[in-house]
Image (cartoon, rainbow, N blue to C red; front, side, top):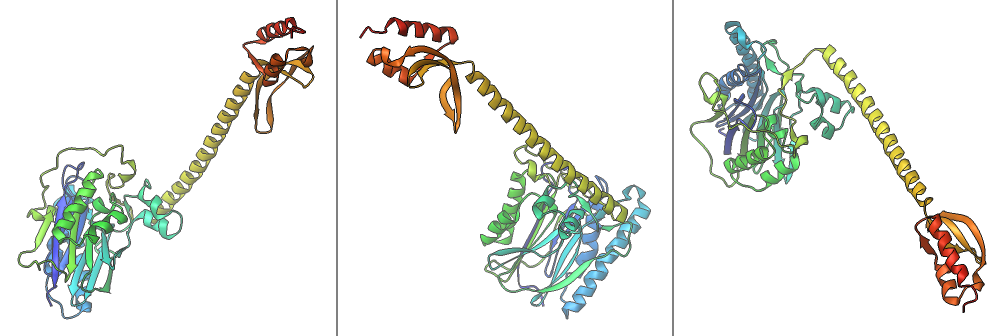
Length: 411
């Protein structure tokens, strides 16, 4: 059965990259995103070769089992295409690509996946990530070493542990089947979208219920507003729904839209704003590190980073506490350079400090009992002394006391 629904695909170079290494495909039954890697001269070729091989799967299938076998076999064959290409063009050695693909078979979605391009399902007002990233940081998340939020900003977030490349003719590809139903919205995207636009904003956009093409445009704008440090490729497939069924020629976008997979016109140069430092996850080139030794090495590095982070926090806390203590000590020393006139209840007393308390701690102490009885002063001056008289210095305080002595018995 031909897929009943509507779809759209778009791809954009982004604001930083000089060429587009992504490719996307939206057809009658088949939907694919491939994110190429391998530098300026290789990633676009890799994703184009993958799409060229996989697009032959865009046909009806008798069963999900047939589609799943075909998807597994074809993605593996695409790895062979990359290997053959590198033999002819050695300068492309090291190229590779992610692949995430859906074949719609009746009421089911047959899914194939390798790398960190993602497939999401929006159903019943909830967005669910269907695929699991084949990345180093995802392994850290799965093992409980870091949280998903920490993974977004981890320095090794661009390291892939599985990819369709020119070094392995039998790549490990995840394939599985899921039921789908009318009203479902399937989103396939490269990390140029998922790396800078969080799930909350993606879900809000899908919830608008706009046509797939308009929805993809809004998601792209979100990525561009966040700096778009990487190529952005989006494919949306709506199951059923109110929007017109798209039929006819498949939509091919990105590097695969050019027959030889050459670079597409570059976007105007831009830079990632310092206002979005946490959204630069996709700015570092993706690369492939399959070796177990590398994994252990980076895990140990992650432990060192965690230890250094704790030491940094402790050191920072100690510095802050020292600064606070120094400030308190300095403030206290300043108070002890001040003097005022008050009373101990009987006599006029010169106090050192200020007539306030810091909680239960007094900030003054008697400096000199003048021997001048408070009751010997006129009533008005008794009240003034009881309220305390500020002075600029010890000498000034002694001068004030001398004036008070002159007024003794004047009432």
